[in-house]
Image 1: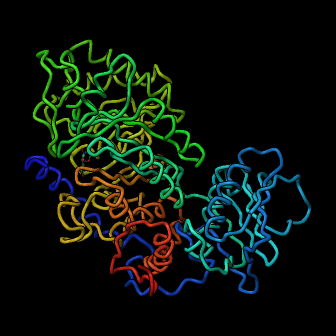
Image 2 (image 1 turned 45 degrees about the horizontal axis):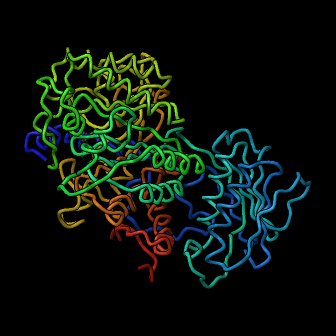
Image 3 (image 1 turned 90 degrees about the vertical axis):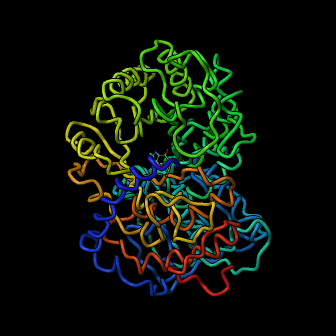
Length: 544
Ligand code: NGO
């Protein structure tokens, strides 16, 4: 990271810390209490906290050798979700767990039922009801996404060992009671930077498995930056041949072929996760400039850049028509491949571009995005110039653009909250954790309690409440180079952000959260997640 960027970012982040001190005033009582987690009753151990939980201590359902998963008749979605559930249960329990579509019944069948339709309307499209008695578990939802969310809750009601891929000792008890659950915000995102260090399709799918367990429903892929171009674009082969050849620290890296990218999209689709592809610009573009000489103002290709921070000349040439032909091809291609509503155009840290040039670039880009049928998403600065009615901004820093960003929400823009001092998963937890070289410091240290100590309603002053779509937690990868690193930086902070996005504000409570988070430890052990054993969390004895 260059000193200049570091210092500028740190200064901008400091104002955020001042706001953080407001958290104790604005969050409900208990939010700042000491982490003396009251042992959660077993039905109250789900992260993110469900909207309504009514435990029934008199009842428990036991998954046994005869347990069957029944799914709604003629619903490929319900069947697919049932198979996913059976895929979790079979290896650890050793049971057969057949998945059988059944027509509607008056009384729950003995077993686990995944039923589409007829749920309480207040649970909407992503919520669910979950009823556990001695005889049955019934998850009912209006839409497949809700059924999928209900299954994630059911997994968390079972002992963590259920996640193991080899046979474990039971019993496999599900605590009795009723849950009625639905999200507070429609956008609960995680961003993964595959540009600074390349992550394979398998690595991304692993992350998808981890984040969807916490009801994250958007995966923002940061596909291009100074150090790497990670997506194949027909007609522009050098982007991946040259731009995809390396990464931070040098050495070989990689990129997604069209088939690879489709595999990620398909894996995400089956988990009700919408992919948001990002093509950053006009800054953060050295990989493209190294690949094609004609994209540079002077017609000379930049050398590849494998350092941290901005490349010396990593900005696209604003006044060359080929820049926009290139962007049209790139954005057109990813718009064609990606089913979700957004193409993210970046727009962050364009420090070497004049305001007029920045506006010229963004105005062209927003037309290209619209032409290809998508909604523009961009880091906060982008919204200082784009049409608010057709843009979604991602708030991340107090760098002077935040007032304008907040203002645009009164003119039709929507916004997603990623405040760097709370939600940046690439920051260290403490001055010494993780040990160097992993983790950055410029936005401060983010222990688990800090990641949990904010709310989307006050983090961006002046924002129109109804324009806040939700939250997103970015994992930048300048220092992150393996799945073990990804695990360590994301867990246990990612579930904290997921809970801020999903759970009603009334459930926000550090003591309760830290206790529920502790219950995830054995689950992550079974999943072989390399999580940070934060001393703030009362992990159960025996958790590795
Ligand atoms: C900033 C910068 C990224 C860095 C990240 C590191 C944004 C939006 N732009 O966040 O390029 O990777 O910090 O923390």
